[in-house]
Amino acid sequence: MATNENESSGNVGVAFGLVIAAGAATALGSAVVYFPNFVKYVSPKLLAASLGLSAGVMIYISFVDIFGKSLDAFLNAGHDEDMAYLFSTLSFFGGVLMLKEIATEIVSPHCVGCVDDPIGELAEWRDMAEQEIVSRKKEEQHDETERMEDGTNSKNSANSEHSSGSKKEYIDDTQGVQFAPNVARTKDERELIMEMRPPSLDNKTPEKEKQKLVKMGMNTALAIALHNFPEGLATFVAAMADPKVGAILAIAIIIHNIPEGMCVSLPIYFATGDKFKAFLWGCVSGLSEPIAALLGYAILASVVTQNVYGVLFAWTSGMMVIISVKELIPTAHRYDPKDAVSTNAMIVGMTIIALSLVLFRITV
Image (cartoon, rainbow, N blue to C red; front, side):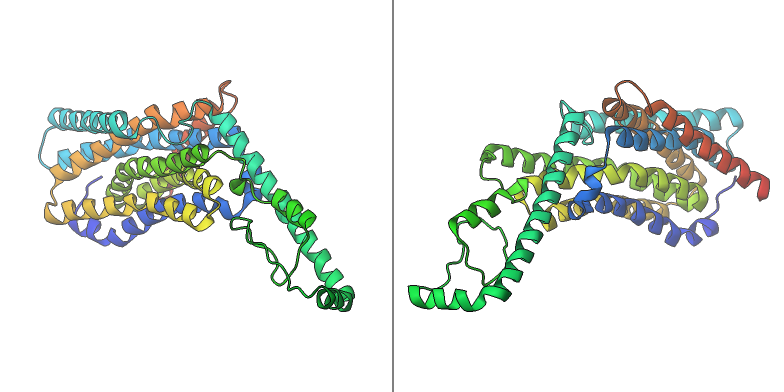
């Protein structure tokens, strides 16, 4: 399939849109801190299936479609079939080796499931989310009860305060816990409410453990930002040549970017209790994808030749394959040691994309 400058320039908006959507998926995943009910139902098999599905999509489209576009580009540049195949192959392994070194030296181990016990970590997050849900319900019930009691006993409370000659005492030793305003509380009430705090605010949690969680979340954000950079470049290049292929690749990236965002925000939230800060770090980790798209646009805008397209397509193919083989598939198996869903999900991903490409060829 030939690629020309006019077609590519018309796809710039679509390409940027797809890359932004893929990067925004990381922010979407990090937003789970606002929805503890969702965290409660995230299972290891669900994460394994999403990673396997994404890997299947990326591997199949890289070998079957994107690598073929590299061959076409080199052929359109005037090379014979043998030389075109050689250049595409060399460029493919160039992408593999480049990203393998980056992944080994900077990004590895991959952030999703990179801890010694990823299943245990996920179980801990689910337990914390469950505790927060229970705490919220208890707090709501307690405040509702107080409001009802205030309405019926306000006169007695006023008389009691007047006779004692004291003002209402407000809690100043709860370390950031928010309660209903203008409510005086007894010692027993304070102790009860302190027990209902979210786990992230528990004084019994060692300070070193909180710092460890914050550091884990921030390191994860940095590593995912580096990991997302080649994905953003690959999506942009693929979409510039063929928006349909770019859309398929973007969907595969979105599928595994969501759990990546979750792995950024949850450790930070459970360590600090600050939802916005946790969410913000997840957003930052997704910014590298549109930045990579800008770099790709700068390259293609300055040097638009079939040889450049041939190299970029093969690089893209190689990078997507190594991301799948080195990161997504091993991580899926860490969440699914018995391979109950990982391989099947990968096959399903390949099948979905294969059928999509076949239907596209038949109908167009």
